[in-house]
Length: 267
Image (cartoon, rainbow, N blue to C red; front, side, top):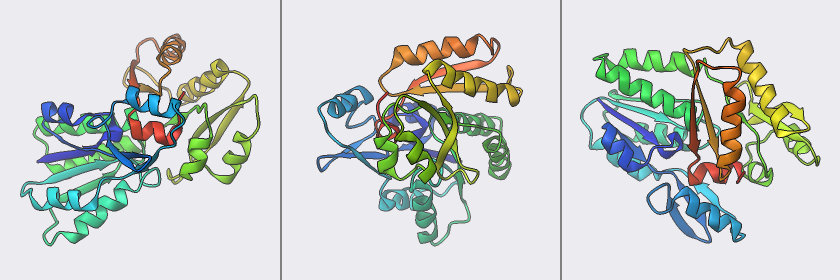
């Protein structure tokens, strides 16, 4: 069985090779130049372009590249994409599957998420594959984890989310108000982003997320992932803040990929 994901799961192509999976790079466009995540540019280099005043946009993997992978693989394929609505990658993958004549061995999962949560789902699929489970059972178990995840974003620059069209109109209006720190989460259909809480400080914004996790009864069986865009010290402080409440829970810290920084902005 071949497991495929995209770089929104925060894996580079080289890391994918080491794990025995295929990672398809998402792309960021800056001044007409296409940069493939982790291959053509690092997150740090990408941040420097933004600091220079460059305005990036994103592009999902070319459908032709995905078709080539599907047609060139005879074994079962499990493709875990970034969430539909957060990107066009899932629809792109479905289009590629429908273009392949014999496609009953291709399974595509809309993870409904990105970054650390998507990375975990890929890790779970790898683990279940190593355990010898058949692909249909792996799909069932991965989808079970999809519905038990929750994601939040505390943006610093709302122009990126507005430009990407991923904010609901209400969220866009709230984000125009100065001196507040909104906590955003996904809509019920997991396709857009809406306000969850409005706070006066970053610490209180994180407290709102912590309270949500408490309501989920988060314990040692959960994983909390924190992704940041060029603010590692801030992210490390968030780790400490969360650790005070969930001492036995695994907490992971990641630098976001260039395309995810394009979605949410620096900070």
